[in-house]
Length: 422
Image 1 (tube, rainbow, N blue to C red):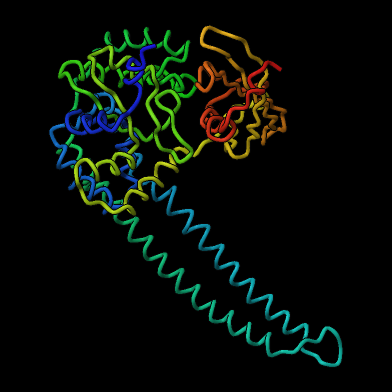
Image 2: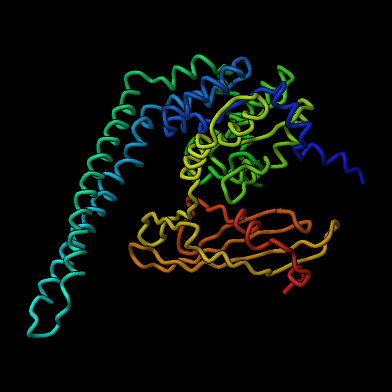
C-alpha cells in the first residue's frame, strides 16, 4: 500500500500553513451574503484586519458576483424581518403578557383569601409581599421593553442605511478580484457535463437538482469550473470560504464546521493543476486568520459569525404533499433517525453495509400519510459511500443532512455484529 497517495485528502499542519502562505482565497455567494447578518463591528474587523492582509489574494468567480448582486438588495433588510421582528412583535409581547398574568393572578389570590371567617383563608403578609414584587417587576419589564425597543430601532436604522450607502458592497469592490464571465456556449457545456455528474451525485451542486430551475440548477458547478480554470491559469492552491454547508460540497460536524471538502473535489482540483484545495466556513476562516495572519479578533466576534452560520444551516426535510401539493417542513430534530443495518455484502475492500431509517409523517394541511426512507451505504468500513432519500405520496424538495447525524451519533464505535447482513 502507498499511504502517501492519500495525503492529498488530509489537511496536515504543514499543508495548512502553506495554504495560508500562498493560496488564493475564494468566497462563495453564501459567505458574501452573510456579511449582511454580522454586526457592523464584526464585519468591519474582517475588512480592516483580514481583507487588508489578503488584499491581492481575494478572488470570486464571475458567477458568485452575479448571484451576490442579484440577491443583494433583497437581502439587506432580511435581518430585520428574520431576527429583529420576532423579538419586537412576539417575544417582548410574551414577556409583557406573562408579567400581566402574574400580577392579575396574585391579586386574585389575595381577593380569594382575604376573609378570615371562611375558607380559603391564608395569612396576607406573604401575599402582600409578593404583590409588591410584581409591581417592581412591572416597572422592570416596562423599562426592559423600552430599552430593547430603542436598541432594535437603532439596529434597524443602521441596516436600512445600507440601501443608500452599502459599505459592505464597497468593501467587496475594494478588495475582491472577479473572474471573467463565461459565454453562453461555455455554460451549456457545463450543463451537459452537469447532467451526468448529478445523475451519479458527483459533487458539487447535485443537491440543487430539485430545488432550482434552468441553469440555476448548475450554479455551484459553474462556480467550481471557474475556480478550476482560474487556479490552473495562475498555478495556485485555493482556500474556499462557504457558509452553505451541503453534503454536495463538504462533510460537516454537528457544530456546522467543515471537516473536509468532498474527496471528489480534492482529487479533481489536484488533477487540474497538482495543487491543494481546502474549505472553511467563515467562522473557521476568521479563527484560522488569527493564527496564520496574526490578527487580533475577539472570540466573541467569531461566535457571532458561528451563530449566523448555524441559523443558515438549520436542517429540515422539506417536501410537497402528493395529495394537496402543499409544502411541508420538518426540522431534523423531529425525525426519528433510527438507522438499522438492512443489508450487506463482501467487496474487494471489505464489507459494504446498507443502513435505513423509516420516517412516518403526515401532511400538516390535509393529513395525507407520508413515508420517507433515508438510506446510507458504508464502504469500506467506516467510510460514507452513498446516500439516498425516497418518499411515498410526496416529493422531496430539500433533504436534511441525515448523513452527518448518522456518523456523529449512530456510528461512534463500530460493533462487529452491525456489519453482518440482517
